[in-house]
Amino acid sequence: MVSGVVLRAGSWSVRVSPRAAGLSGVLVLLLVVVSGLALAVGEVRLTVGEVVGALTGEGGGADFIVNTLRLPRLLLALLVGAALAVSGGILQSLTGNALGSPDIIGLTNGAATGALLAIIVLHGSMTQIAVGALVGGLATALLVYLLAFGRGLGGFRLVVIGIGVSAILLAVNSYLITRATLQEALAAQTWLIGSLNNRGWPQVGSVAVALAVLLPLAFWYGRRLGMLELGDDTARALGLPVGGTRLVLLVLSVGLAAVGTAATGPIWFVALAAPQLSRRLLRSAGAGLLPAALTGAVLLAVSDFAVQRIFSPALLPVGVATGTIGGLYLSWLLVSESRKSRA
Image (cartoon, rainbow, N blue to C red; front, side):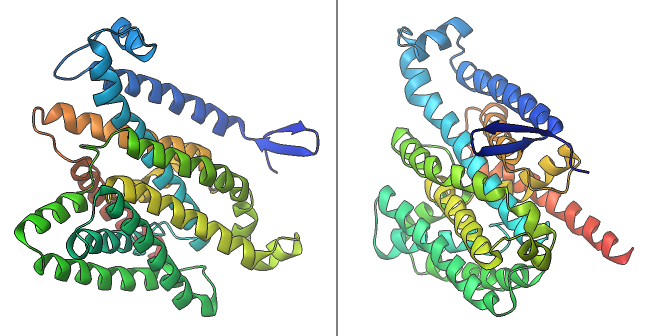
């Protein structure tokens, strides 16, 4: 029996789970708290009144600190965290595998290859690097899709092929760095860590525009993930065009991952961990893309805030924190999946 409340508006209807709504409310509250701390706490501490004044255009001396230094970084963390989490949630649902995420199946390394080519071969600007990362991620997804297309995208097939492609791309990336000059290698390595440092309103604007298109589509098509998880035969019996739906969802997942990576560099394991954490909090096997998006935003914002405050005044990239936490999570996940397979 499916629980929830059905909300209707004309010919449109959506089923809302009370638990999902409650979790989303808690996550929104956490976002408000974390955002307040990120804007107020730093080398220069601000009061709540000063932060609110700066946001409303009456901040005086706090205006530069809030609106130029802290707010763009915070917004980019929230947007990229949400994008990566939804991307991972879609892939994990499509593959029926907890390891199905852009980090694991090569999309992140593909974006890194595109960015490295822009840095080392084209000597490109930040905009060209972002475009290179976007193209690299999309090209990698196309390659993985073509290799996996013969027998479908479910199960371990897409994950295994993606891991193989990811390993090849990692070797290519290492080769590109060895052929670079010292300055180019430093720039490439800085980008590869994944960082919110030196990002501003241009990056926020480009990511926000992309997500304004991709996220509503992902949430709309995400309603069909539940039917796909029942199996292809059942989904077809319910009138769902399985092949077309899978392709659209895969394209949306790739686009979200590529946009996020293009803006900040590879920020590992948010796409892997956020959807799983959301599912565990929901106690549901469903995708739950909205709670996953909020979880991803909270994870990345908290990680960036922690890195800034714990290691202050050093400006460590947020990728250091997510990589460390994610590595521990991946180890636990592999052990857990291994025990399940033996049971």
